[in-house]
Image (spheres, rainbow, N blue to C red):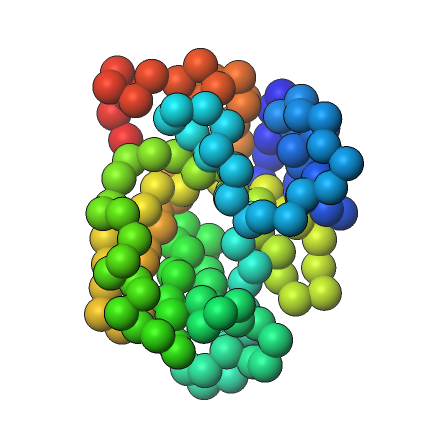
Length: 147
């Protein structure tokens, strides 16, 4: 299936079933491994008031924000910063990403990879592709692809 930045979906289950061909009745997670090399990611984007997220925009201390140009997503834990170092190291696994703004729908925003950990911004995810054909990623071989 071809995805263009800005395509919207009401729910995660709609993305998983209509885009990736799954047959779920409901989806409760914000991350799904599609195969050994690629995942679907559904970060909820916080609205910042200064440097602190608005109430209700963070989940277990985690807060996601996005750069103005959409090329970077920042994921930080304000309540428990040491949790950021408990994750896996940066990798080149692509995340086909559908962001959700408060009171909005899930919107395809591109393919991101986790690049590095920054002390002030948290985990930094960099966009590596915008409009894609999902079949290209579903048959993706990590060793042969330059990211």
